[in-house]
Image (cartoon, rainbow, N blue to C red; front, side, top):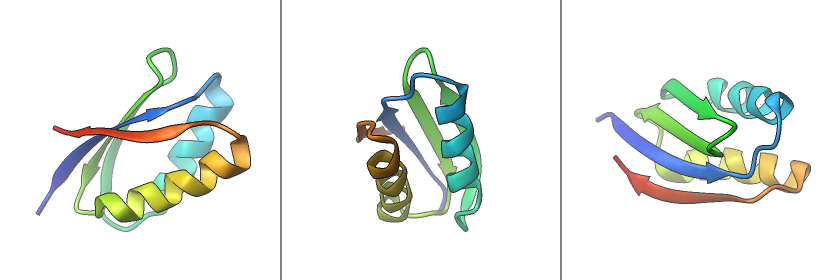
Length: 74
C-alpha cells in the first residue's frame, strides 16, 4: 500500500536537497520525492515504511548536523 509522508528537514541549500534526494532515491519503495529547501519540507510517496525513511533521513541528519522530524501522513 502506498503512503505519503511529510517531514521537516533542516535543509539550507541545494547540497542538502541533492544529498536527501540521493539517499532516498536508493531506498526500495520510494516512488517520488518533493523536496522544498525554502520551506524545509520533504514529501515522500511510495510503499517504503515510515521507519525505513526515518532511518535513512536520520543518517543524513547525523552526518549533516541538521534536524529531521516526521510531521504527518498525508
